[in-house]
Length: 346
Image 1 (cartoon, one colour):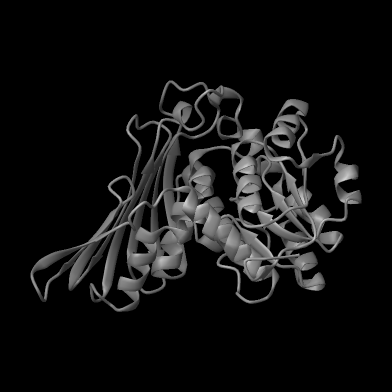
Image 2 (cartoon, helix red, strand yellow):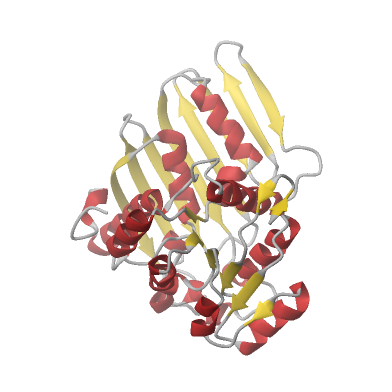
């Protein structure tokens, strides 16, 4: 099937009909996908998705595989990502996997081996790479607009009960360690884009704890310190506590500074050469779902082999490795090299 000059796979399967699963269904529809099958362990969620989007809902996972989808969106709790992705990969199904790739290193190497053996296209959720502000930061860094980068300060914080209004935050995966929750993995976007902007991470240390009165069994505050291959240091603050949503990034170089503020919708660049700040605002009318639409459209082009995935399963495994190293460092109270979180290299 072709839409807007693209070849749409014959059939998509969406596993998980929570808020992010529904977003992907809606966006696939908007991009021209007509044959979509959905599965969720909760009858109410899959029924709601079927009614809202006119898609076929199946009651059992086995029935979903019998639909022979060309591509699968894995939007279930983190703890089940690799298990389901591996089942899809063994059937030769291309994969869009929500972030993070997993909550442990277990079976990640098996998934990667299957992906490589069957030449499967993979994309792991990295919607912030499609944000116009961070894209502008990336362009400025590519032009060495601040000279040699020495440091980065990155922050993401929001009160967990506000993430999904109308839902009991205590029942979500974010609140439960067994499902892969915790702010380090939940906010892995910040680790990913730090690496995207500044290069490979060579070492990480961290402190993390459950400090609020939230009824969760995961860490709700984390402070990570990264060293990048180019020598720069990165500080990443993550929390489930801030009552006013905050997401910012500051890059400090020897010839200037770049500041990105998500809520303000702007990037500010100070050049020591000119002694002035320059402002870059989000495009007029831009709204957050545009990131997810662009991300899914990118996945469709990857399926046609017209583009390389912005974050495939192999690169996402490396980001996961860094996050797990941070969790180990926080637990042990020692400095961990980021390659020590698993028995072997991914």
